[in-house]
Length: 189
Image (cartoon, rainbow, N blue to C red; front, side):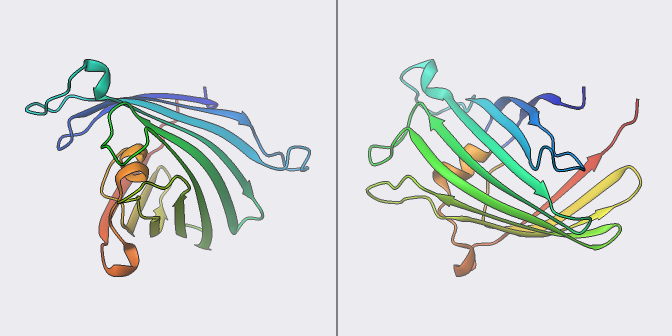
């Protein structure tokens, strides 16, 4: 269905195995009867790193839940606001298990096949020390008939959102910048 996505992924360096669910709750209509899209995204990740001492198997789990509220204002500009809750079963002593954050993002179409992407996420929960830094991302998207290529710079180092939201210590404006690349393929069945 085009309203529900289920996925499984694995990362090489962190040895995280994750299950994710993304589902459309509301869809924006052309007549503005429904003025926004509302989508839920969530994942559960298991840390399978060897050589790390976890007292219990349950300590290896982390979770992410996000409500994405977006609107396409016209054929050129779209925007979203996304409150989230990240949870890790095992954290350092100065941290909390739950972290609330809000992300704001936008997409501006420059040509019919090229767009500018901007993302900012602000952690709300603060720790006694080493609170996570806000996330910043700027990128470009280049589309063909069935592919979308994204090239971006960001201060996020992880693949999964809870990694970035809970533990990000990179400061974008202090030069802690990483390069990212995504390819998306649309299959028509």
